[in-house]
Length: 455
Ligand SMILES: [Zn+2]
Image (cartoon, rainbow, N blue to C red):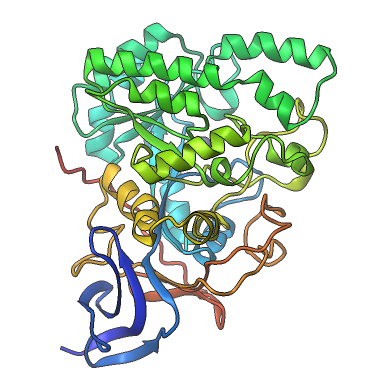
């Protein structure tokens, strides 16, 4: 058998297999050979990756496309491809009772424009929607649904397509979730009544900046609602997922539920920045907020000891102009996909000695497994999709937000150099970006229906 592509002499890291020098062979878009030797076999095209690392493509399970203005699949997946991301799950929340047309619209847009493979999370904010979870899994291949505990005032979530809720709805939704073992409830957990009262107080006192934002949404509001989620989950048996865990208290709250512990995601920004990084100003505004250094340290400990299950970007492609103004009026969220891989490789692997295999577990294998896409995605075992990234761990550079492809025009990391930038990214064996040739002109991203394995 002649391979379509062989990548030779790379340092390969695969979760569960460790790190070894070897070669990878691709045939018909799949991994056909994986060897510790210097050759994967005869191939039409041979790439010598000596001195480089080869990792599975990053599976970013948390992105928001289309919220920043003119950001869409073409702009954002260019930045993602350049940063080593080959699959993403994006939030599609504007559903109400008609799932079919928003789903088809976004899927068609992705199939026309996306450079990487993609799937969706839906939103659930009513009992009527909760009764359609099994139907959504069968009909659309979507098994994960976002619930916002923080939208409680009528009309507040309209811009996202989210209804106002209360904990009675949460409990009922979880009873429905528990009926289908494929379904995962993703719960944004912040006790918003406390946030309202603190924000009013701080704002009228003239407080501003990231520290004030953190003070208005303190760690205990996050921990409090995780406590509710964990208890309801134990009572109902629902599978729950806490996105963007930001604090030591949140980790402690989740760990109490040993029998049915929520799946825990954190994001690169909570591992690299604090609310004392005043130079960021409103650029660093996000929910939950950037926290003090002690929370960053607690999150790294949880990354090392296995408490954190995955890392995802929470990418939101805002423009710098929307982030100006005081902390109360600027928009929340920022771009994350363009720096996610180098940020974790630099701060985790290079500076803190995180095993490359653990980084690959958190960025690739684990998210693919949790959301029902493993082993097609997240690994490079023979038979998997040949999605991989060739990374240079030796060269340091600042993110180039002028030419990175994204709609957004800034990065939290713009003032610093990072290591671990990709030199080439491959999707199903096709090069979709490289330092030599730039982006492919032929977007071939496919929709990924979830196929969860039980147990
Ligand atoms: Zn998000």
